[in-house]
Amino acid sequence: MKRLWIEEVLQYKGKEAHVLGWVANRRDHGKIIFVDLRDKTGVVQLVFTPNHKEVYAQAEKLRSEWVIGVTGIVNSRPEAMINPKISTGELEIEVTDLEIISPAKIIPFEIETEGREISEELRLKYRYLDLRRSRMQQNLINRFKTTSFIRNYLASYGFIEVETPYLTKSTPEGARDFVVPSRLDPGRFYALPQSPQQYKQLLMVGGIERYFQVVRCFRDEDSRGDRQPEFTQLDIEMDFIEEEDILGLIEKMLKELIEKFFPNKKITQYPFIRLNYNEAISQYCSDRPDLRQNKNDSDELAFAFVVNFPLFEWKEGEKRWDAVHHPFTRPQFLPQETLPELITRIKQAPHTIMAHQYDVVLNGYEIGGGSLRISEPELLEAVFELLGHSPETINQQFGHLLEAFDFGVPPHGGIALGLDRVLMILLNEPSIREVIAFPKTGDGRDLMIKAPAEIDEKQLRELRLKIIKDN
Image 1 (cartoon, helix red, strand yellow):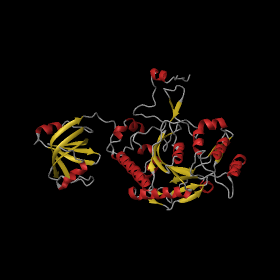
Image 2 (cartoon, rainbow, N blue to C red):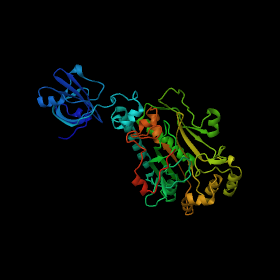
Image 3 (tube, one colour):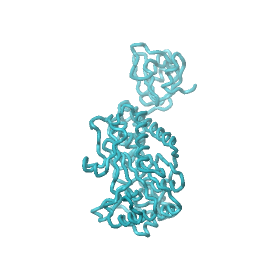
Image 4 (cartoon, rainbow, N blue to C red):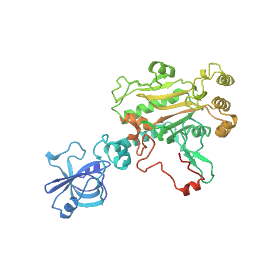
């Protein structure tokens, strides 16, 4: 018989139905056994009676989380037994055939609750069980709906999604890289991308014009509740634009997303507030202020764009200049300032340079950021030199980008939104680990598969690597 989803049982009253799923619980009431069967669409009550002796005997063995399949007649429940808390609460299936597909051991925690009372380490160790709980499944369903909406929204504005490489080159752009040794070229390494920054700019050189990607990014840095060694961002790049083009696109997309899938949320102000960086620091002592009128109201969404960042910041401990965002961020020209004059100002007075940089802030979190990009090779070289890179290093690390710019590059810019962080806020979760299927712990470990892990001597020899252990 064709398998029915539990939500489809509603259409089979008085008919035979075949459903598959997990035993949520079993209750013995005298000679009648009740079982709540669960699949991804809902829960339905099964009824086993001695009228079907072999099936009844099998049902006596059932325990929570066993995987079973049943066939039976869909009947109306007695009025006193109707359960208004579930969509199938007026129906039950009188089972005539039972197949035990997979018995299960006693599970280490309850999954009928939201799970917040269970230690996170235990939940992450048995994540495949934790994912069975309704809250986690709804989080992943909402994640899927959100990414599907974004893809369709951007496609309607002429964007196409392009995949960029995961094995790339280590370049000095901020956080530490995760590196991957090359077996075929010993002593050389790939790096996992901190973001597709250079590739998306090269796509602009390639004439793609409107690019986006829902992409994995990797940063070897300290973890916290809203950060992971690997995370997902919505990456966007477009050419022939001004700052307001990107900001307008993002605020409209977020507004429509929230109205469609999170209608209980209320946006404090639309269009979103624009704050100058200096204004945010002076008024709120933060470049990601929480602008909610009632900070205890999780359904209030206070968006803001923070703009006009300084391009450079002085690292006192290292006695050097660094990029506030990244080195590809476009400086703001003064009125009537020429390119050579701007380059001179970068060399002589970097503290005066403002950037075409913008962050998206929501309820005290930075949920995204971007900038217009430098498209003149000589301007990019001047920025790299101020940051302490020699001409040889610039050519070695970024020569491919500078060479590409010699073949005609349109003015361009982009933005990236941290999807994990956005969903964490919209779903009222305390950390991004609650909206990721298989997250790491706060210190970057996967407790389920026990990673990171050692590799054997044969692999080390193939990679020409040697482990130096601490004393």
